[in-house]
Image (cartoon, rainbow, N blue to C red; front, top):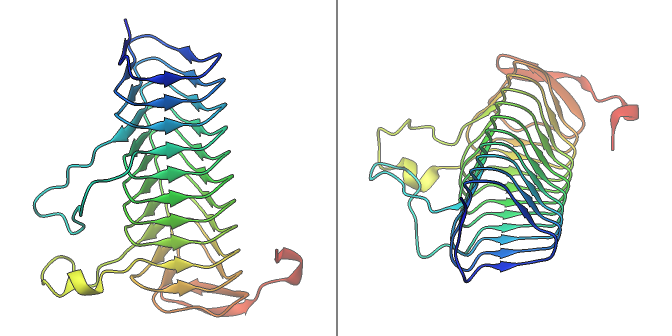
Length: 243
């Protein structure tokens, strides 16, 4: 049995699986496929041609702990999912996020509030995208990476599996951290190898190649390969590999 609020606006040729809940004022486009046991919270907007796999939760209202670093300020707008997106099984996307067209949010991924994701993006299995993150067009984030709050990934960025980004040099022990919290900025075309760590506030320059396992502690120069612990200049990126 499904529970669909009477105020839901549903397009043509929409398929809905079993035991799905769709709350008030949700808008669903044409040719949408919704799996079993999906929850779509109030006001969510879903574009045409979207596929939503079993167990996904869309438009979830955030409820941060009293000790959370990032606080809510004001009412969040509804979740908006662009045309022809694919939402994986048991993925969770919060209210206040915007997902661009043709984007994949894979199984078990989570996308928090105040996140903007561009078009043709891949957010891989088990990826965690925290709040206040900006992700450009055609960026790929591979499985089990952690994108911390206040991170910016520009267009055509590649994040390999198990990359970790950080935003807090104080580790929660001083109130000063609230004024200085800042994630990494990864510029257009940069690539970050598997298991690499980006420290708070660093900028990975355009077309930088960060080697697997590197610890990036300071800004990089464009079109350079950096590797090591901490990461240091190794060589220039081969021109054949530039965008």
